[in-house]
Length: 229
Ligand code: APR
Image (cartoon, rainbow, N blue to C red; front, top):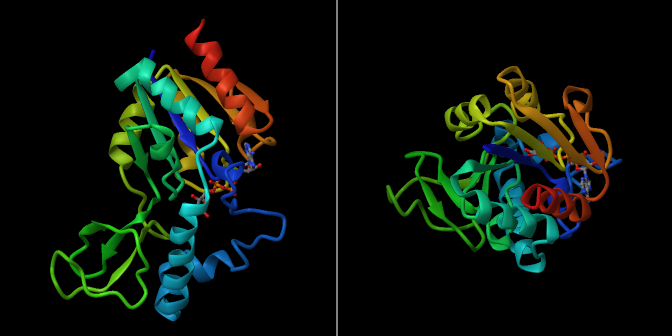
């Protein structure tokens, strides 16, 4: 059975990573437009670099939770029949043991050159750093897909969505396209669809089945059910 899993901020919430759409509508006390748009970066690059530098440094204080580990266990069983697509920029899937992860919104542990557009693995701060290691002169920015920018791996993801048997969406509000439309895409091509989220997402009615609760409980239970079916 071929499965595509899409994850969002909710899967990392129990690890202590803040989700985006909390009640106050702020992301770590900043307006999303200020820190997650090309316009925000152009207006105040230092603020944006500092913001992502802090998020990158905070990775050291969080650890994968049972939901990340369960998906890694599922990969061990399914191998290439599982495609894990995440909107998250943290590295908790990798640290949980997953090897085949597509970060459609980029990664904190990567820097993007604004001039040559090449990426470099990055662990420390970007603010005040030297130029791009590839071209030697370009400015480095966070390798994060901001609003108004094209997500990564779209061809690969759409190919997988149109050929999978099951699409599962975990911990995402369904507020941000194109990821929010994956359920309809998969369903149109014949997949069964399942939502695992704390509460009904914006697109909950598009799914054949929805289970609501904490990812740390729902995901291991679902993987267990699938593996032992
Ligand atoms: N278990 C499961 N779901 C949870 C948990 C939990 N412990 N805690 C929160 N959630 C759910 C929330 O109910 C919410 O529906 O996770 C969802 C998180 O939604 P968002 O904060 O909107 O995050 P996400 O859907 O990943 O955002 C998508 O928006 O800002 C952009 O690029 C950014 O990738 C991000 C995209």
